Length: 94
Image (cartoon, rainbow, N blue to C red; front, side):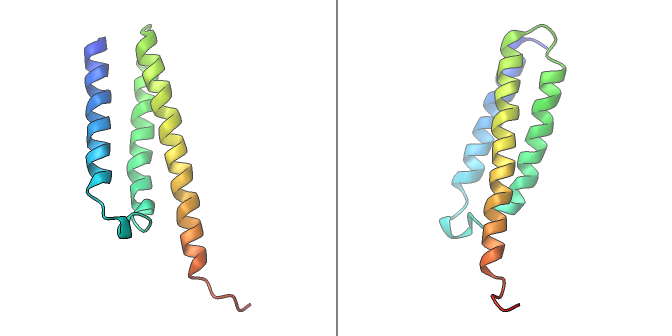
């Protein structure tokens, strides 16, 4: 694949992610974080595939590496937020 294909995939993923987050009301953002972890996991796997198939293209490796890093941060952060949210509903009695 050439640079334009990688750039198109990157821009399309970025646009879809922004639109997805923008449509979620603020009250539902934290509860939906656990559901969005699945989406981030899919983007993480997709980014790893792009990095693996990048061949000799340095820009594809750079963009794929950035995507892997940001998706990994998003997945870990989502699980941390979900864990904290679920801890609020646990009873304090042993």
